[in-house]
Image 1 (tube, rainbow, N blue to C red):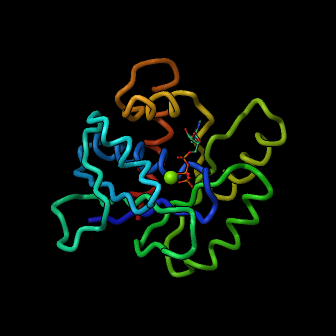
Image 2: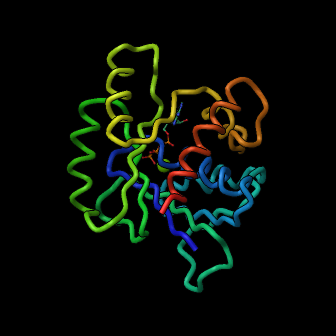
Length: 184
Ligand SMILES: Nc1ncnc2c1ncn2[C@@H]1O[C@H](COP(=O)(O)OP(=O)(O)OP(=O)(O)O)[C@@H](O)[C@H]1O
Ligand SMILES: [Mg+2]
């Protein structure tokens, strides 16, 4: 069983969006998944309450290890409750302020495997595109700014449950994130 945390002390960088859509990528690839909503804001639980997700979201890490392939935890934007999972996906924006915040954040989780994920990249903006390309060259995963992420969660779904414009590209980038996690 793999335990994956979506964590960053920075708020609004896409932890919940990516945690739920990553869970869907794993689910539709044939894995059993469970999402733990460890954020008191309960955003992932709110999405789950729409009864559209194909996997469960629970409010705590289970005491008895469940029979799943992935436990995916969505953390609050804080350094108070640090992730215990062996792999941390650290979402960030393609901005200098986020770069600085991420390098400080990494000090809290030194012993973990960290996969940096530059999220909501707006490729129409020159500076952002250049920075995202540089971060990609440095080994970060990229997820573009797509309205399908916003629209699908608003209806209680992931992009994997959508066929509308942008869904295919969104699924591809999440599948690439899954492949990265699965790599030894
Ligand atoms: N790739 C993306 N493209 C477009 N919008 C996105 C993308 N990722 C996230 N968003 C939007 O950005 C906002 C913040 O996302 P989200 O709530 O997932 O961040 P978070 O890090 O979990 O926030 P918090 O720190 O408050 O828990 C939401 O409105 C979400 O729909
Ligand atoms: Mg969140």
